Image (cartoon, rainbow, N blue to C red):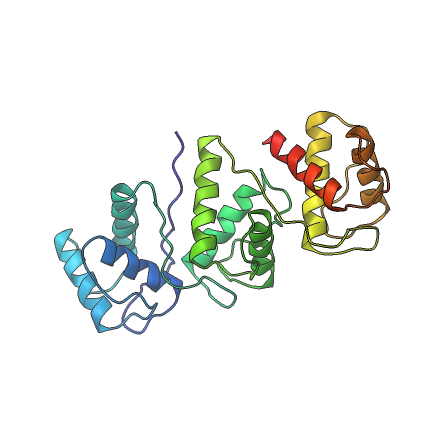
Length: 259
């Protein structure tokens, strides 16, 4: 069975004075492996001491710096000891403005999930958490009924890892996005529109239905309306080209049936 990729070394050694999600991951792994330190994303004296102790236990140079060898040892040792949680939540929010290995890991994983959930936009995978990554996280949160804040906090990170593990196991998670509360119709825009466009396109392809495949662009134009009309006709719904609660629920149901 395929195994979940592990976060790659960020390319720059982490040492006293470093900060951010990459440092927090090191702290989380050290603490979970029996080398306690604060989990605050700030690489200070406590973390340096814990890294030295870990390095000594593994026969690495005990310099207190998390370079390539120490990083690789940590992520591999953690994954071996905690296979059910191979890439833990780093302990601090991975959100807009953060950079490094953890944002890059999130971006790459969301790109991989696009195979199943094409509402997710393609990301650059550059390790810079900008507005595009925030949008992708927000869409992921929408599809799995999480708080849509565009940040990877503990709950979102746990669902993200769960979704990736399920993808690799061949048992994809079903989506359960809440109806946005108001009907979507021609002229509507936004992430909810991206979701219905992706569901329409996948259901059309898998079921071989005769309606146009809309672009997944978040803009409810004539092609999306025609796709909705075709979907409604195919499944015995009111044919009005508007995604109200009943059409939304049936779209989600039929999309999940394709997974």
